[in-house]
Structures are given as structure tokens and as C-alpha cells.
Image 1 (cartoon, rainbow, N blue to C red):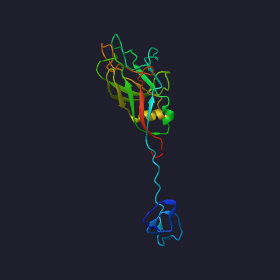
Image 2 (tube, rainbow, N blue to C red):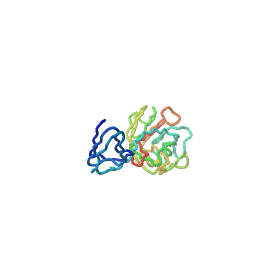
Image 3 (cartoon, rainbow, N blue to C red):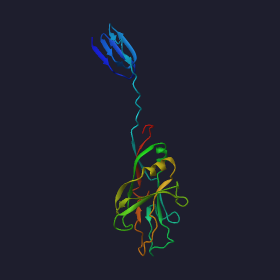
Image 4 (cartoon, one colour):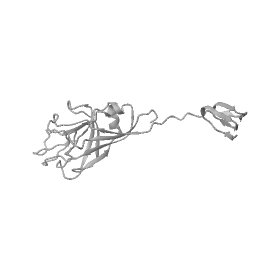
Length: 236
């Protein structure tokens, strides 16, 4: 026994208006769909125009994923077998020599490519733990590069150098924002991994370069990891 009014509505549905033992007055635009009246109900919709409206695309929400390094290894002329630390810079008891091989502390993230392939990367960060007793006592810059190598084989080929991310002190755990392009490259296979690499320079008689540091690797309780905000949907 109710009375309803449909005025200037739009959309698409199976049943647009149904009146049972009641009355519907419709005017202007109404949704597309069937109309039905029963139990003496009535629908007054003689001069209406149906309007299906426009389809609103489904928006896929962003996802945040954490990807721990599946392997870490440092290269210093050859792949080091004495440590799984992620080492940046160089240590030399006799000071700078042009023949020194500078460490390239490499990291690989085994599940990242399969998870993020085809996704749009929105933002990313890298979390590192700097070990105590490595390099200068003050906070030093961390330098990030992307490499071609997908494992600890061959000389690490640097494909992109992103420069300094920020500083980290001894015994600190720091999360650095990193360029989206670095993770997008890992996801689409352009890059094989990431590495820390200080560009060589003459550091004189000092026993280590300014950026010499050791970060915890996969054999430590502080494994490097990426935090990535991404979207897997077509409308992301």
C-alpha cells in the first residue's frame, strides 16, 4: 500500500520498477530494466525516458608487498667467498691505489619478478642494517645501482646508477626511498638485481673509502628488504 516516486534516475538493472499493492509515479529519466506490477499495484511512467548511465570502471586497490633478499653477495674483482655481507666501498691497509677493486654489494629478490610482473609500481623503499665496526664512525651515504646479473656470476654489470639514497650510521637500520624505476626494472626483467656501489676516487692514505660499509646479508638477522606499493589492475 506504499507510494513511491522515481524521478531523474539512471542506471541499469534487471528490474527497474516493481509495484505490488502499491503505486509508483515516475517522471523524467528512469533506469533501464523491466517493470512489473502485481496485487493491484500500478506504475505511472507514461512519459519517462530510460537512461542506462555510464559504466564506472572497477578500480583495483593498491597492494603493499615486502620482498626480502633471497641472496646477497659482494664482488671485489671476483665474488667474495668470505662473507655474505652487502659491502660498499673499499678497505685497503696501504691506502688508495688505482688497481684496487671496489666492492659491489649485490642483492637479489627471488619472488619479486613473479609477483610484480605486469604490475604498476607506485612507490618503493629499501631497508638496510649497517653493521658496527665497518668504516667511519659517522653516518655515510648509501649509493644504489641496478645490475644486469640475475645471480652471483660474472662481473656485476651496472645498468643504472641512482646515486646517494641517504645516510646510515653504525648499528642502524634505515629505510630509504628508492626510485620506482629500480623496482619496475626488476619486475619487468630489465634489471637482474640491485647493488651498493661507491664510485672509485682517490682517498689518499686512509685505510678505507668514505663510503666503506658492511650491511647485513642473508646470513644475518637483518636481511635487506624492499617494501613496494603496486597495483596489478588495468585501472591502477
